[in-house]
Each structure stands twice: as C-alpha cells, then as structure tokens.
Length: 216
Image (cartoon, rainbow, N blue to C red; front, side, top):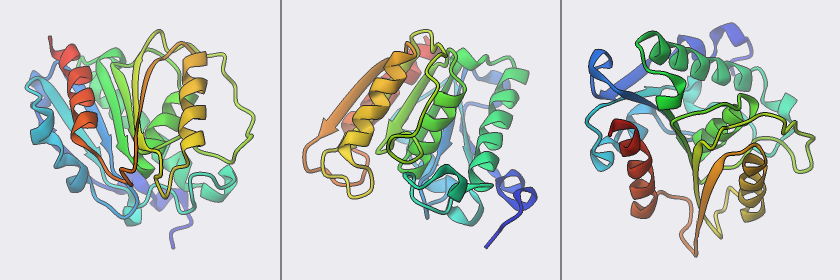
C-alpha cells in the first residue's frame, strides 16, 4: 500500500483523446472509477462525438483515487484524496496554459471518479464549462460541515444515478445536488429506477450536449 503522497497519483500517466491540444476549443477531464483505468473511461469518447475538445484521462495509482468508501471520514482517505485534487489542478493548468479557460473545461467522472469531480468542484467553486457526476456524490461522512459561500456562476452540473445504486445512496446524491445549487450551480439531476451501478445512454446524451455547447 502506498502511504507517501510523493508516490501517489502525481507520477501516473495521463491518457489523451479527442482533439489535439493545440487545436482544441474546449477540454474535458475524465476521472475513472475504482478498479478501472484511464483507458476505460476514454472508451466513452466515440459516444460523446466531440470534434473540438481535448480529452484528458489521468490514471489513479493502484487504480483507485482513494482507498476507503466515499462516505468515510475524510482523514481516512488521505493523502490519496489531496493527491487526486492536485492531479485535477495540474490538468486544468495545462488547459489554461494552452489557451483553454476553466469556463471551457468539463469535469466528468464515473463512480469514484464522479465523487472526486464533484468534491473537487465543491472545494473550488467557480465557473466551469460543466461538471458531470455519473453515479457519484460529494465525499465525506453524512453531516459533515461544509462551506457554501462560493459561486459557480451558473455552471451546468449533471448528476445521474440509480435509485438503487449499491455504492451511492440516493439521499447522498440529492444532498449533493442541493449543496451545489446553494452555490449557484445549475444542476440537472436524473434518477434512473432500478438501473444499478452503470452509465446509460441518456447520461451520455446529457454530457454530449453539455460539451457540444462549448464547441459551438
């Protein structure tokens, strides 16, 4: 088990897809789930049908962004969680340095990656091109005290999840949506009866529309 933050996600590769960076008009950071890979989440690229967007998919160390459940005490998921936030920081800076502002960048995650995307955004509220949390919720135990003084400036946020997801309780998804709305995010939440823990085509379409708006 890795215990030093120096040897965590920062040394892991980043897979790319979509438009070359120098030609891209927008960017999307794709965060895979626990036990999965960057290649796994990049497999969504053909379904997204993006022409002017670079896709950046970082790989988590040992295929996990943090070791415990998303609802565990925050300290139990350190230093992994802080290292994962640093990865997102670096990728946004990479886009910014190439002339793609954060308001033209989408954070997309599935499962553990969705929790990471939502939690990163909640801690760094500003205008993004969009945030998509597929089968995820904010990280931390129920009842944790959170600051809600930031402003997302009407950033579009899509959250999709099953009502019987075995990993993400529905009430945590609903709480996360309300919290982001308090910070002026424009949240669309869709709950799919009996779906299980997976991504469906309706969610793909919602993300596609979010990203296409940045390419127009």
